[in-house]
Structure formats: structure tokens, C-alpha cells
Amino acid sequence: VQIEESGGGLAQPGGSLNLSCSASIRIFTIFVMGWYRQAPGKERELVATIRNTGIINYADSVKGRFTISRDKNTVNLQMSNLAPEDTAVYYCNVFYGSTYYNADDYWGQGTQVTVSS
Image (cartoon, rainbow, N blue to C red; front, side):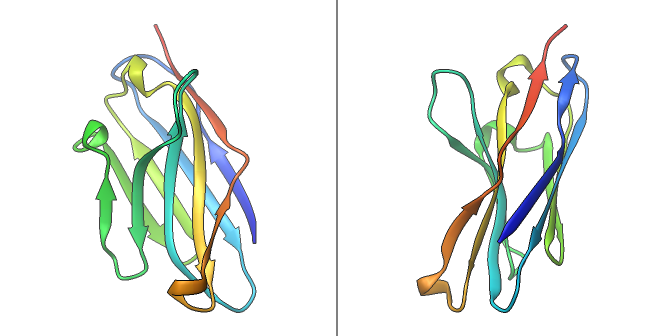
């Protein structure tokens, strides 16, 4: 699985940014796509995921501000009303395999999001 991320960068508090991630796959199924983030000195945490059934999950800290969407093998994250606490490296995650029970996690290289005035 090859994962390409784009977007990110610098935004002012209250501003917006968009992240995009595309996965190149061969035969099997992407069951879940999503975004995680890791701030300096902190563990990686879930931001939002979207299942191939359409079920979406958001971290409480981003509900109402971030919107995740998916089109085939591409997942997008629209981030609005950004706050300094959103500063982190954002990683695209793809849960992929022949069946859900033997699927694996695949990760992008990460893209930096910095929210600062």
C-alpha cells in the first residue's frame, strides 16, 4: 500500500486547512481510512476515521470543527476553526486487507499542521 498525503501547513487560530490522502492498493479492501495526529511530547491520537460502511468517528476535541470524507481510495480532512492545540503531525491511516480480521494498518509519512498567530 502506497500512501500519499498532501495539505497541512501554517494557519492562524480560527483558520482552516485541508488534508488529503490517497492510497494505492491492488486487490484487497480498504476497510477504514482516517487521520491521527501526534503533538510534541504526546502519544499519537485518533482524529477521525471513516469506514467503508460510511460510519464516521471523531475525537471529541475536533467534533463540530473537522469533517472527514472519503471518495474511493482518497480520504480528506477539512479542518476549520483551528486552535493552537491542533498543532501536530497528522498521519493518514489505512486499514487494509483481504478480510477485516486479517487487515493491517498502513501509515503515511505525516504532514505538519501548525496553528499560530
